[in-house]
Length: 230
Image (cartoon, rainbow, N blue to C red; front, side, top):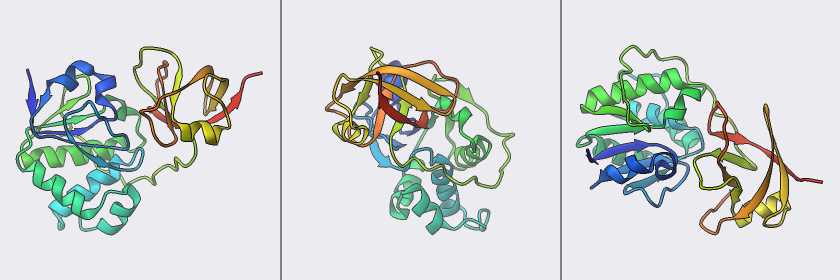
């Protein structure tokens, strides 16, 4: 089964589920902090892990009375999604058939509110919700909690995803900030995580988000510290 008119909220779907990515055809949109060049969709950039604010903004602009407590200017500024872009996304939703979300969102600290916003939008625009494993989702019992403050991802960031190797794929900018050379052996340190890996310069990557394939039951993005292994 192929999918058209997809409202995609997945970070790098082409890496997480290549088969599903290839089923997405026609006119689609993708909201993420990472531009997935292999996904056939118009890219809308937002801050890392800011989907709760993006969806809150869309809900506010689509029903200002129901979401009267929300400040659209604040939501737009925090998520780095412009209000004009949000209106374009709402216009797209009028003809959307499917909303696809990242299965890893279950580890997002604001997951309950995300489910609530998704359920509201899916009902309003008559869309079905799938996760990135192509499983149908029912969020009708979700309840809204106060929006939690977004985490700060300034500095070096690790993104966990499926790759064909175990190198830490990074950009030139990442190497410069880490003060390391390509193919250097490094120690990656994060909350509840210490890994020793080899750096690999990927000319297709930009910014300070590096990609790594590893097992970890947590949110896919994490701030890290990097030092050369001795």
